Image (cartoon, rainbow, N blue to C red; front, side):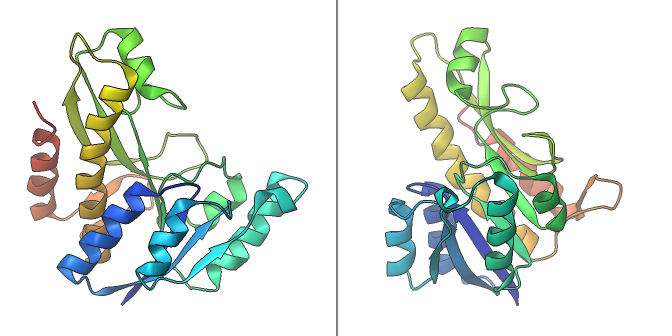
Length: 217
């Protein structure tokens, strides 16, 4: 049974989607902990009510990123995680931390990577005049928003879109694809190869193609 640890900084809506799907589908896994760098993160309350252990490791208690990541890593490793999920964890992670979890850490980014890395992705998409936007689930590497892509969901960009409207449609798709990818990893149907490529079992290719087509086009 795989141990899952989730990192959040705020509401953690993707964490909520994963927890709800986990409970509905009864995965053969364990939600071992939800950890936040902020004591006031709203998602901690949801996780606690769901019976998941919660921890706070505040970045404000440490003088630099390296010392913080060392303590965070030690805290995470208490749960012997097979999978570490970033769900709105608003911290840039050090190379050493990322490499410690190579092949075990995933993130979801609100754009169709490699386009629109970083922040304010929805406004970036509108400003660029693209016709489609979306979300990407990827393995985490030291390169910011640059890890191997696992799955993407596509949404249209409409002429009257603003940042909030577009963000809402993208978030809806995030809540669809992230839990599905997590389950497929739990079931050993998605993994990271030593050469950095993503290994998909044959039946998963069709499943992820369905996700891409299910973005509202």
